[in-house]
Length: 359
Image 1 (cartoon, rainbow, N blue to C red):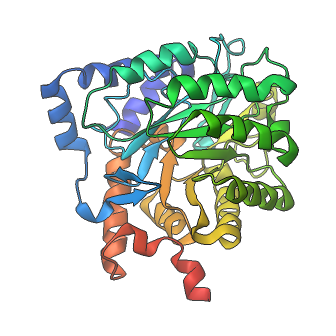
Image 2 (cartoon, rainbow, N blue to C red):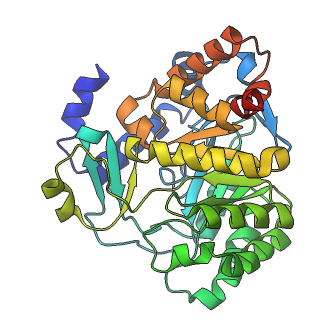
């Protein structure tokens, strides 16, 4: 049924259907009876999926990646919709419209998306108001923060600090986004000499766990350098990875891809590199950092591979678009089956298992 519905929805512009679908999700979960009914259909409450990382309790490991709920409009919806947590944003200190439309594109043959949204959001103060109004007892919410486009790179640390100060008291954890390809110069901030003052500024403003989100396009040496910096500064973890600027290995003809232009590619085409980066990070930092894996996860088997490769938590966005409302539940059911089939009693026991087997 969802496959048929997807064909109908794909007749509309991607950003249009995003707004319509998101509005429907919020409406379905606005009141307690709707939340209860939605959760009864879409949540897998299996206790084996519960995990505690960086001092936060997660009912299940798959969360909604940043980019869907940019302004924290749906913070009370994501738990009933089957996610174990959600990451709102990317939020910037100042409100900004983002890049001109069209800025979101589908590649159905690859079950992928290309976006150049450009951190369109209402600003950190607006997101803070929404977070302050969220209902008690919901799933953990992380705040993903980025640089305001008009702010010069030399002023980036102060800009990130504004968002951190506003959102830190209201979120369960914070992710510093320096890896989107859609804000000019942003990825340059992944260089250690630029990243250090930004992370220090954020850490000085908050008492919640802080993570950094990196791009799949970083060289292996730069990945190692960021990992070492994260350990040095006492970060809680790393989110790996963001979208890629690459276009290799696509099924969609190049003649259809080239007119789309610049933007970050997400979905299955980034899966191999995302898993590769995850394995490299775990080999580098082991249990010193929490690793959140995102990028191209579509099936429970793929999710299980990320757990065994070192991920304590998972995220998805494009998989949700193509997989539909039952996608989080199917991922969680499959993970629970894998855990029991391999004799584990908790998710944390399986994290990094492939490295331990090799050792």
